[in-house]
Amino acid sequence: MKKNDWILGGAVAGAAVLLLLFQFLRGAGKAETVAVTVDGELYGTYALSEDQTVDINGTNRLVIRHGSAWMEWADCPDQICVNHSAVSREGESIICLPNKVVAAVRGSEETGVDAAVQ
Image (tube, rainbow, N blue to C red; front, side, top):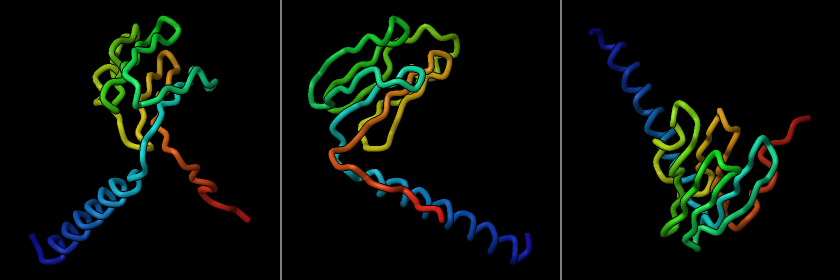
């Protein structure tokens, strides 16, 4: 490999580390609730501080324990949402595409405007 190849590889690796660090620090807000939407409509908002099991239209089962939430069961064929790791930080989400279910962790404070376009 040439010197420029090593420089390019180092730059790409450095950019990846910076993006991961930004992603990690961005979601540092205090997570308080999980908002569940079905087909774009709010199904319910549940406190992460309260241990509970939520049946979502008979198609999915969301479990909230010890400040984390995970999809325990789904009737979809691919089971990607069930195999997803637990979410507990603001901005994380679990998505079940076949059933159009989204469980998103929200924090206590509103983040406001993401961007402005002129």
